[in-house]
Image (cartoon, rainbow, N blue to C red; front, side, top):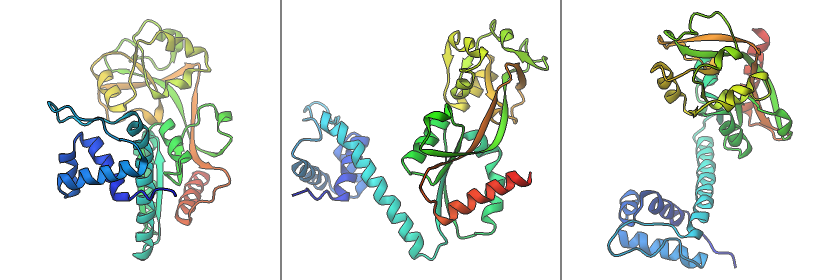
Length: 298
């Protein structure tokens, strides 16, 4: 007979792991510590093995067993799936028009989507929207895991995504970003050879150079920064230069300049990403149609 895993026990397990102790988990759950310990023991009994290592009397640190390390990922998936279903059902019973989830790369999220979403929701004031912004890989993963209804991102190596539909909407060119007092700052355009004598900081969009003659730059780059806020801070501090798509360039910065890269000239297509053969919920389909209509009327 399959064990009946209670959701409360799964939450207790995750909290003990994340908060590194039974006492902290008990406070979060508004339960006593013995109650949390009993909940974990019952869960371990159902699973037939221990989830946490036996604690040293000299320390209060709580560590997962190898099985616990494996199981916690599944426990979080179960909790997340349950919570999404409950959230959707509560919106329906609350007479809401629907709930859509979307994810986008930060450049479009900050530069384009605010105005688009404001116009869209003006006709659907009761619509609930959950919005996530992350890099292209994370957006695609959210689409694949059906955490979101659709995504907005660039597809690196489109032939590897035969399970997805990609509708290009925006296009921007790649350029060089450097401090305003940098030797390259007064250039109107740049060739990749001109960058070889300067410290290049790679970022998540640097893969756009992979299939171009400028890919030689990547092998000489000593630094990689994935977070855009950290990248901008390092650039403004004069640590080096980087390449970015135009939409990703922080236009509010008074310390940086964007110089088009003309050799090679590289463009990035950003568009809507959905799973093939999977219907969208009505609000999500309506937003997709709205975005496409804006592109066609532009």
